[in-house]
Image 1 (tube, rainbow, N blue to C red):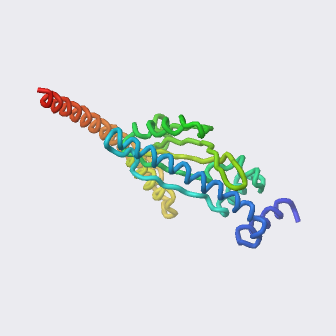
Image 2 (image 1 turned 90 degrees about the horizontal axis):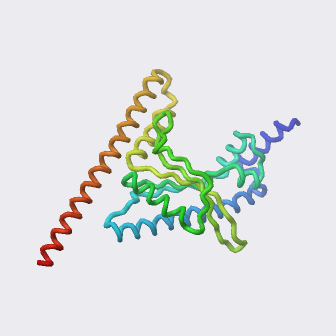
Image 3 (image 1 turned 120 degrees about the vertical axis):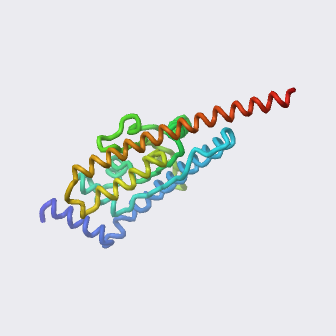
Length: 235
């Protein structure tokens, strides 16, 4: 049997749960990633609470988490022709632990990013700002690749995780764009659809900017009213 055939046979047996003992180390290793997700989510929830106390509002609308399954990990290794080893997984796959933070305003994204990476137990590995530099299709988001220490009975381990920050408008566009673009029935007018999706992305960008302006104006008016109340109380 050729090397390629051996690999395909191995993948088939793993994906069909015929090699439970062989993938047990991988499943055990996923515990670290699950704990990393819990740690990061807890950090964001703490920042959300602290921000609420200081600014009387919450910067986080929702937090979505995802732990990549064994099947998807194996398929990704095979897709990029990476070795089927734990070392290869830890070195080459960054999105086993995935966290998506949906924020109210664009400025909240950068506040949360700064607050997170300034923490002593966070290592920033890579940063891609698709908000300032959107992808050609209109996609906007802030992506961080980080490492965080996880402590289990077996010891301390630095674990990789990927974080995505989006506003509500960014997430709305990205979710619907994915459904439309990967619709198997979409075979005609692809260029026209892509053009319209890009226009929708630009509209979402303008919506974020306008909502930020409204919010800033509201803050100014609230500050003025507060000062007026203080002056009345002093008199």
